[in-house]
Image (cartoon, rainbow, N blue to C red; front, side, top):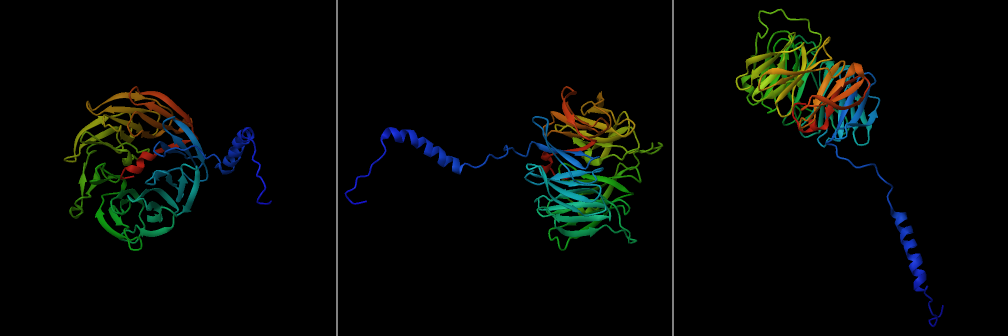
Length: 404
């Protein structure tokens, strides 16, 4: 084209017609494919389907099931902790399996078979260590929370060289974990600040500690004792004082009933300056003053309590029971100290979990293959869904709480 050539432009009317098409084509070339619906994790949770080795991922606002994740092994005694950002659930199975589940992608992102028999675990306050407590071989193991790489193992060995079952594992500040040894009758605190060189302190724990917890204020570790009436308590702010016995002989002079299911101290409650504890082999909930740790009352209940759980505002204690009365739930008013409601939510009520502000409680009815949801104000069912032999219910709000 010579310098004298004239450039011919399309008439304005034609540009008006073709320009929008060009813009649309360019935008189509750069558009990202639609992504899955965005959601926060604070509304999520998991329900264990113990018979089938699955978990259901649920959201609490709509009371709905989002997904089902399979392949988690033996979940007959499963427990769950959550990452600090509440995105991942760490599921501890009875077969020793430790499974990391991505709640947003609804898939397994890590799994190790770390023991032969395990009943739970915990996560460090900084979210970097996941620790499993094991029956066989007895002891605790610490894993990298990102990769599930084994970082350390602490065998629970008694004075005569035998392995002891570990129970009652709970997290403490500073990558420390506290736990009890069933056969050895001891309480140990292990510091994993240097995972290659864990440091352990040992304390007396009483006769056969079977479960334990850390109080909500982080001050005391309390272990229930199967081999004697009473509990062992360790003041975590004054470790040099050692442990001491509380509620010794609470069943003195009475013949204990057969124990069909061990109470779960992890489901005990502190409300209004009092602790509410299920009594072994008794149809009672013990009431203890948390200032003196002396018994101040007992609440007669329908049967042998398993969980005695406080509504988050502390006004009520909800209690479920061992077989053969495991279809019942009773509600204790913490002001009057009396049972105010007796409910039948379903058959085989294994677990209860309150929403963080307490307006609902979710209950697993194993023998009805359902999760039932109750309004805690009206004591009426407000929802639920099918689940295969459900047991534990765990909401991500646990990620912000110590002792789990």
